[in-house]
Image (cartoon, rainbow, N blue to C red; front, side, top):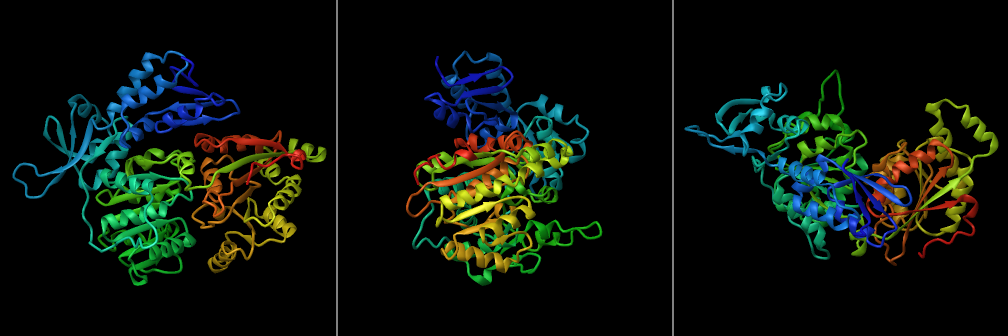
Length: 556
């Protein structure tokens, strides 16, 4: 037993990164274990109930999980943990939601059924569950108020008994949608994602940035052939979805509407922004009528890891509609992964980034952490700064500016993004680099024009704020230089690396640099941010800024 994994009774898994079987072990535990810490030599994962239930819903069973642990463990696996894994995964599906005709009634009603009467008795004792259900039908079945389908699933998950939703969906208004595959076709993993979603009914597809999540959405729309509501992060994303659908499907311009701050079009396929739906005036959401404006057959949630809290509340009332969430990461910084599971649906398909890279569909990436030193005066100023001001102070260290300039020069001529969090820092860098700056204040028309120039090679350098984190189509970006971020956000790190992962025409490697001020909270947050990418198999090389001249970049 010389495996790379140490399995402990507290449900932590320690993975020796330098072991020759580490990559195989990482791939096998990824469906059910979440990475917690990722220093240089030993990564720490944790097995959680939600991770096991997501794995179960995605088609993995307890036998596969147990086999992965036994196969890769260096020492005997605690028997108590193996029993707990089996029992936890067996909880999923012990309760099911179905829709059936009861007795002499004409219409089918929503029912909560169990294969274990003691479980049903247990959950019905919870005060938050009691108002959501009606009368007993028999010893194994209880009625559920139709409007409480989503809320009941939320509450059942909280008490540790996730319900499998088999109650089906309304067909919605039929609308013909086909894929126009004259010069392209769905990649095998994209087709698997569509099939996994459709077979499961509702749920989440997890794919790397640049791997074609939009095409999975288009494939699901064609499979459904019904009116579709697409919810996206911002207006730029809405326009990109529209352009991609016009290019990849049989939909025409008249069939696609935009529902945003500037337009209020309701068409068979309507693309709405999260902002407009969550706009609140005098205590009410004036645009919620959009959810009932048509008999939607499918609802798509782009970047589901960013779903605002009000959208969860709205989604609880949409459980009779098919729902597809698209994301590069199920990590939510607000900890509401359980709401994604219960209201959008469990994970139906998850393609590891490295697997997609190995197939040539996303570019290989060289991730480098460049550590800069503060001057003596800056170190003293940092030491006496208020705790809540220290991150900004360190993240915006002037010492980073010269390093950015050096890296831009190193990759001169290659499409390069300089990405940051703080506007004054970015304005200074844009001036120093003589490069266009895109922030939240930049109009949609200006952004689209700069993106066009960038894509077509008219400009090769852009300085962008966090507006570039999500749904920005920069297919030829091959270098990203991150100067500051949203504290320790793992999801942001994933999105920013994703900006450069689209495959390059000449097969070159993408480069992702993160500039970090050593001996500050900047370094602590950077370590947290990198956890998700380490989970996907990306390793950061650490280079001192003073050694950049002599450090050899990985082959481009």
